[in-house]
Image 1 (spheres, rainbow, N blue to C red):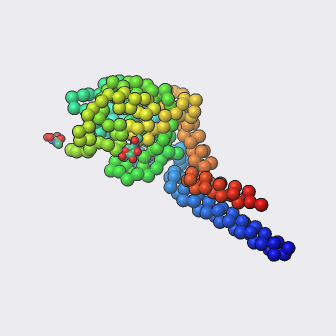
Image 2: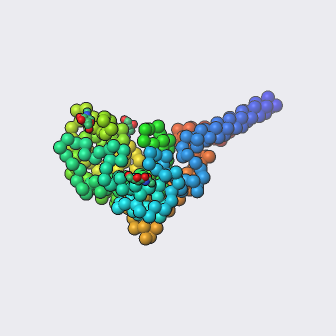
Image 3: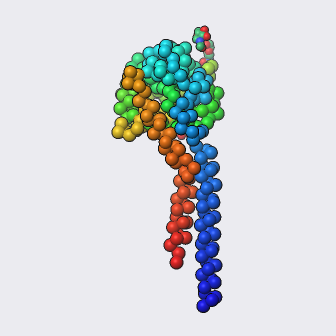
Length: 270
Ligand SMILES: *[C@@H]1O[C@H](CO)[C@@H](O)[C@H](O)[C@H]1NC(C)=O
Ligand SMILES: *[C@@H]1O[C@H](CO)[C@@H](O)[C@H](O)[C@H]1NC(C)=O
Ligand SMILES: *[C@@H]1O[C@H](CO)[C@@H](O)[C@H](O)[C@H]1NC(C)=O
């Protein structure tokens, strides 16, 4: 009897030891996970974030002279008036939308890319989605920013019949002479042939900067009426709260699944 009891005790303490080990491992993994994710867990910083890019200001602030498609951001912008003007008239980063030989992007399509470019340079609402990168034109980028389905769809509809030679504009061009060229031997097709659908287009063109998101979910607008304030402020706040809530306890999914399974197995033992 006593032998049985002490064996049981040993098994139990083993079980608790296993649990403590799993918890400790979990907390370690959580630290690793949060260090790899967003760049801050301070909500105010996240809501006033300007990308560490070539032309961005260090903090957002008023800019009453913002040009055309960038003007909605004039109350609080990460871009200067100069940059807002330059991105409408020239290729700020040497990037050309007219990369298909003999083709010029339609004005309608270009307008949407200019709005998108304004968002990139001017928006102070990207903090919750920023990660570090090592590129010549920037040290940070944003990933999976929720873009409202209607705005993505209008953008794609405007560009459907325009031409391009690659789906992944962030990664696939060859840079020569300070501008982008089609990958060697890549033929040009219409956007509709290359991307097929609006969601595929928005998510691929800038390598997952955007995430196609139903209008019923919190999502970003590429343009808005500044008289009503910036509707993306509220979207960024929700994003920031999610980052903080996920915060210290977020685990990489496989590790989390493994831990839950192990804990359940330990608890299920008699
Ligand atoms: C804006 O651009 C003009 C001319 O390109 C330049 O002289 C001026 O210094 C720029 N201003 C700022 C604030 O960058
Ligand atoms: C690079 O630019 C120069 C001047 O703009 C031009 O003469 C030359 O052909 C270009 N080279 C290539 C490879 O496009
Ligand atoms: C873009 O290209 C890079 C490098 O090839 C790749 O890692 C990434 O997944 C691509 N993005 C998309 C959206 O296909």
